[in-house]
Image (cartoon, rainbow, N blue to C red):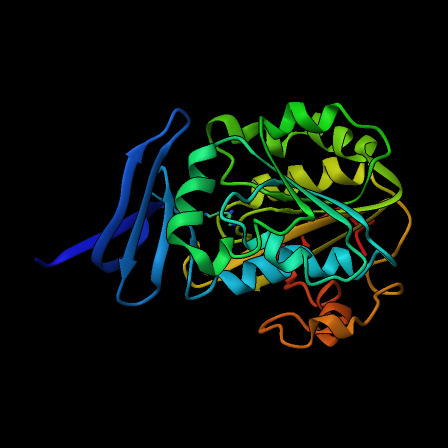
Amino acid sequence: MDLWYTERHKLGFGLTCRVTRTVANEETPFQKLAMVDTCAFGRMLLLDDMVMTSVFDEFVYHEMITHPALCTHPEPKKVLVIGGGDGGTVREILRHPSVESVELCEIDRRVVEVCTEHLKETSCRLADPRVTLVYDDGIEYVKRFKGKYDCIMIDSPDPIGPATGLFAAEFYRSVFEAMTEDGVFTAQTESPFIDGDLIQRVTRDVAAVFPVCGFYTVSIPTYPTGMWSFTMGSKRYHPVRDARKSDALGDCRYYTHELHKAMFAAVPKFARSLLPESFV
Ligand code: SPD
């Protein structure tokens, strides 16, 4: 059978790829969850009919949501991930020898269970003794802590339904409070091509809370428009001046120390125009 999957993006375009096998397809208490094998992108995790990760390009997203913050902080020990039940972000965090604990707060247990069984590429380090899995709403979970984490990564789905609150000013204030006095956080912030309004609002809200802020873009072929963004908020360290070269990251496929030093200043002009002037 000739089976094709299409993710419909806003503005009336989409990503279409040929599916060779459906590995999982279910309705969880939170969302539609599917895992499919595709010719072009290998195995893919889909939530509510949107691509969350694919074996083909997950390295870009997971290296770039983690290492810029973890290499800005001089010695990250306690790290919290909100979302990210596929485990790719945790896998990258554990490359850092200073990291003593990683909490993964994922609202949907089935994402972790299905990925643990069927997506070893990303979930391979979830059983590491430094990792604690928490099944909870990240918005509520982060409010319980004050001054605890060195770094926080917001590995959220798109801002739809329950994830909307992960892009709200109040949530960034909670993230600020939950971190140590020199904490650094990074959030995925969608595509500058089609989510400009969101990026304008989010970067303004982050700048209202954090004294040092940065923004960078990466190429992710399976995400809408292929260009994706991340926003960083830091309580003390500067993401360029304080960028630390880590020998532990030698075999990354996208992140390099040189890219880290350059990317905050190399934001394309149309995307830069969305950001507050105070951004580095
Ligand atoms: N439109 C796709 C946005 C997905 C962002 N989160 C992906 C989770 C991968 N760990």
